[in-house]
Image (tube, rainbow, N blue to C red):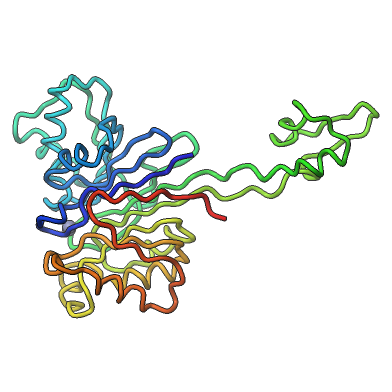
Length: 309
Ligand SMILES: [Zn+2]
Ligand SMILES: [Zn+2]
């Protein structure tokens, strides 16, 4: 079952020739989302072939580098005669501003656009087999991150054990796997506990948007298969990170370590690292407590999120 992340914009604040402003496309088994939509996001979607059948846009906060792509995208969807409704999730208290943004350039589309305010902890989207929840973050303005959390999966079915117990290959296998006991021809009963392992966790993907390190992110990213975290600065600008409500790459790795995340993707990189951002990766990797993998994605990079082992 696909869970694919495409980084559309990995730069912070201002675009550079290499990195556009923030946007992440997520495709979960055909359900398509955008997390943030900086200026030029629609062109990045075309370049990197993510498809345009987006049902939900999750905005972390109302800074321009995260939202200015949305009016243009709405206009294009309008030109293309989109009819499917769109839901735009926004932090609590920002609906008015988002409404103004979407209507500022006479881009009023014919399809239905719902602006859904979410508070930290609330479920923004209740999907088939997963939810997207809002997560408290710590930025200079009202902001949230988002966690896509899949439901638990059924336990592993022990086929050999079932056959040893005399269960005939066929529908009784799926009954057992679905949690039902079955009766055999000789009158004996086999229960699911005998042949089905414990439920297995689904996948967890967290996108912080702009933030200082936060305990709420650590909690939301517990065991996350992929944590996409603000890493605007290297160690040389820690003061600036504190002043502007951002994180350093090292701080992002400390959050990932505390959360026990499997992979960490550094994003929202300051344009001062435009030439060479490798020190951000090095500094994140130097956090000994983090034993996961550090990714430094560029625009257009795709990451497939596998099920946890
Ligand atoms: Zn930003
Ligand atoms: Zn911001």
